[in-house]
Amino acid sequence: MLINTLAMVVPACQRLPVPPQGDDGEVTDDDGTTSSSPGSTGSGADGATSVALETSDSSPGSSDDSVLDDGCGFLCVPDAGHIDLECDVAAQDCPDGQKCVWAASTDSGLRRDGARCIEVTGDGEPFAPCTLPTGIGPEITDDCGAESYCLEVYGTADHGFCAPFTNLEYDCREYPGTDVAVENGSSFPAACLYYECQPLIEGSCPDGMQCTFYPAWLYASLHCWSVPPEYDLPLGASCDFGQCGEGKLCAPAEWLPECTGDSCCTEWCDLSAPACATPGTVCEPYLVWNHQGDPGFDDLGACVQPGALR
Image (cartoon, rainbow, N blue to C red; front, top):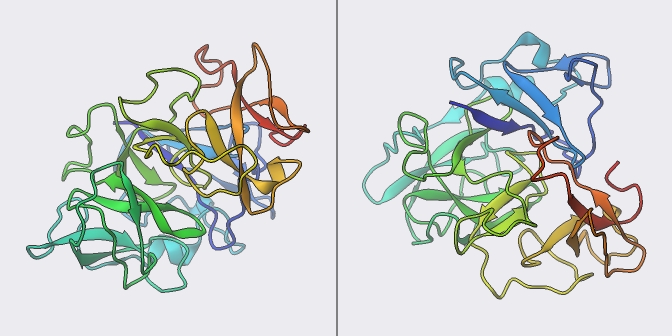
């Protein structure tokens, strides 16, 4: 089973910086140590570093000593070793009418490092939009149905999309075409996702879903979600995760020459016929992990200010 993972920097997560790497693809921390996990690694211009795990022998919280350092690199010792699980997300062993969801162990937590039983109060379908009215801490609630939990973007803890749970065997056979995705160095927060789609290719996602930019250090940078048709903002509009619409992405402000918020809508572009409608932007290559050299992704670009994706 191939588990796709991307690291989320904790606690001071930044928007898609490119971590320095050694010749062997290991991530190099500021103090010169390297972070790695079993399997192969790769990185792309989307700023994401991924680790492909070919086995699932490690238990939650286990890691190679090289992953951990006093400077708290990609995986901090408290995050790796102090997991607060009151239920088993894969087994869904909560009382009737409840579901087990990934949650942060404190209200100020930036990472879902534990699990809680919560009431099933909504009926959101897997991959549909959802809300997190009380955040992702110990008092977490969401409006997804019993089969999924609301997966937000780091720093956007009040909404997201319903991410289906894996089954007890930690696979996704109930959701054909998805793969198990977990956070780097752990077995949580696991979900069944359609990831690394190609936004320029029709049919890259299942019918009724959009290939959406996911701006966080988690899982992968392109996901298929059931984006409502009303999520269709104009180019240059201030935006949040998933709001821009077909053919567009909600990009960090630093990628764009002008942006009135933290993020604004820009467009995907075809490197074989580059064209960008927003003044001051150019079609820059957007590299996707595990698809470098894949002809289907060779022409994928994003309209950003020159050098933003290098």
